[in-house]
Image 1 (cartoon, helix red, strand yellow):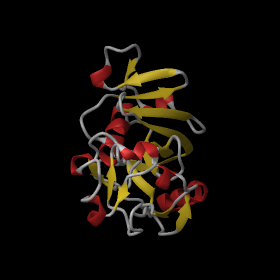
Image 2 (cartoon, rainbow, N blue to C red):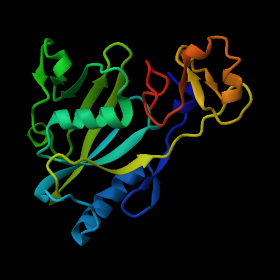
Image 3 (tube, rainbow, N blue to C red):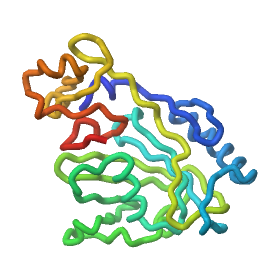
Image 4 (tube, rainbow, N blue to C red):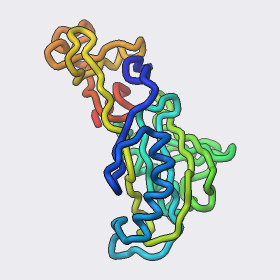
Length: 230
């Protein structure tokens, strides 16, 4: 869809535990050791309600691109609705749309979509996922953002029951204005479907579709969609 951003093969990001910069696949391998090591040394932050729990290393990303991704520490005891809220707050929320997880052929819907055939998100993550599991997630069944999730590892250590920690996230991709070559700050919600519409502030004022179609360029797989502004 957004050709300029997603025409790239990957992005790099920084490990929030040790500061190392790596691409998505390299970060997954790195965190399987760094996460365990930092947790054992007590570096991983916890809250006052922390106790020994199973925690998953979950890799979340755009289903159709390697540009936007996050590596998350997710308590196995947290429910799918907690992960849904986290993804909305961090990457997706714009208009309170419906959402759903698909895991092993079973669909788990947000509360707004409970009239649809499927289960609610009131299931503990550790009951439906395990190391090696893959899942898909959709936000907004009209202008849909699709994510892919995988469980890369599991450890037992101090964790809050509902606290999801970002271990790493991609750095914002460098996107240029299609008109002048400066860094793009706005994108047209119409032209993006043709792989165009990336504009700097100066050129945005001259865009034929009008300012009402412009959205800010943000570090999210939902950039340029619906009314998402980050």
